[in-house]
Amino acid sequence: MIVFRYLSREVLLTLSAVSAVLLVIIMSGRFIKYLAQAASGLLDPGSLFLIMGFRLPGFMQLILPLGLFLGILLAYGRLYLESEMTVLSATGMSQQRLFCMTMFPATLVALVVAWLSLSLAPQGANQFQLLLNKQDALTEFDTLEPGRFQALRDGTRVTYTEQLSDDRINLAGVFISQKNINSDNKDRGISVLVAEKGRQEIRPDGNRYLILDNGYRYDGNPGQADYRAIKYDEYGVLLPKPDVSDEVTDRDAMTTASLLGSDDIRSRTELQWRISLPILVFIVTLMAVPLARVNPRQGRFLKLLPAILLYMAYLTILIAARGALEKGKIPAALGLWWVHGLFLAIGLGLLYWEPFRLKMASRRSALEVARG
Image (tube, rainbow, N blue to C red; front, top):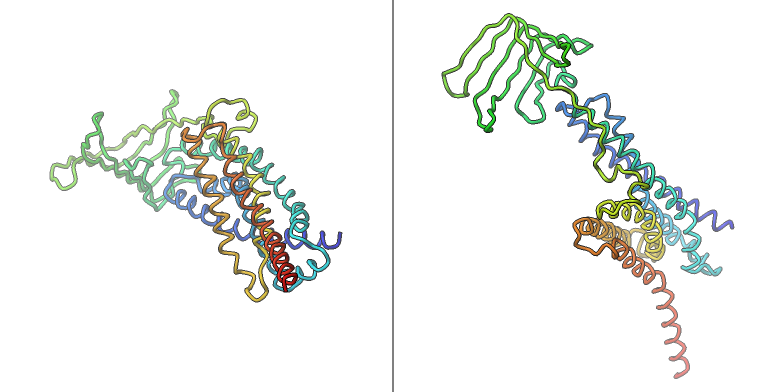
């Protein structure tokens, strides 16, 4: 029992440290991506941390299996390096028994991953998509920042204002450049609007207008001298109506219960993917225990790179099989299970190879002694 607690503590502590580092790296990369979208006006800056919170379960369901795999390699590698595993082996600790003890922290991680993949991650993905739907419904003036040029999503209009009130209604020093495209998608030149000030108005019919005061409008084609200039005291620009959609179309945002009752191949693939993640935890544990065995003279990192490559091969093949299954290139009955079966066989081979090799070497030695 003391050895069991010691090994479990070493694995869980290393798992926590590795997972924390991986989470910081992945979250930082995603945050930078969303921050760039917010800077370009595609996202509301105030919703960045909310978005990261919704995406966190989806990140964790992939980080924890890798964290457990590396945690076993590093924790047990240190024990082999410091000859602690040699002492345990002398007291009857076999690879199979070590694997059985490692299954306790692996089961804890598998339960957490199952909770994330089957429940929490789909809920986060659902809220994330609803938030993006609301972001898509925002006008350019809902995300406009004073003193910065901002382009619309389709790139047809660029807007600038020197000042913007806190309620985002009144503007000062307004500049708007818009491409004029007809129904045949032909470019009809550029219209430029400049005004001393402006304001947003919502009419009784629900239409939203940008009312500009004391300015000019210039129409023409760049490089040509046929520009037309119009001075105005008041000019109204119709803004698109917000269209908030509550529809969730991504399958990773669907509940697991809805996937269970669906006959669609993509829904069934998504369900198999969610079930595959907890299974992944047990199989990588099976592979990590024998791969952590190192010679103290060789160092604890000798097998780390091959082990990581094996893990990446497992995950890459699983993702590729998921894509092929969605496209119907793999029989639905075969699903993703053949990938798990393949690496289960590899894990069993790694686990029993060393005892088999030692047994055969012992037999050869006994035969040589008998013949001598």
